Length: 152
Image (cartoon, rainbow, N blue to C red; front, side, top):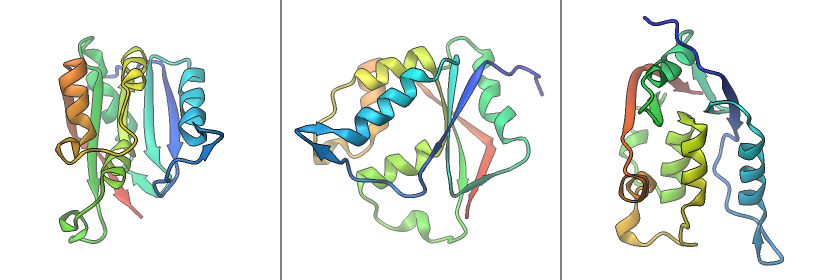
């Protein structure tokens, strides 16, 4: 195992996805999220949902692929206490929220992701947010199976 650990910031996400709060025609929750990410001065931003419990080596595992300069996004494995959880039909917001709870993104790449203009409502053919990243930013997502979190 490599001892590579980049300069990183950890962002703890709420346990449940939230609908955007709109005030005066502006999406307040989205603006607050962007502000938080802009203030994260690290090279890599790591996201963890508040109700996920990581294994002891989680941080090292989620960060280790960044030793490769071409790595932009790393996602880990999420284990649910309910084995049927993943079989339920989920809406797009929940789908994004689940995986964003165990991932790391290179900060300069994150700026590009935040610049993608997403529709207010996702059309049927855009059920997975990552598809937009693949298509518009041409990036691979590294799956780090040993970066395990347990849903609590």
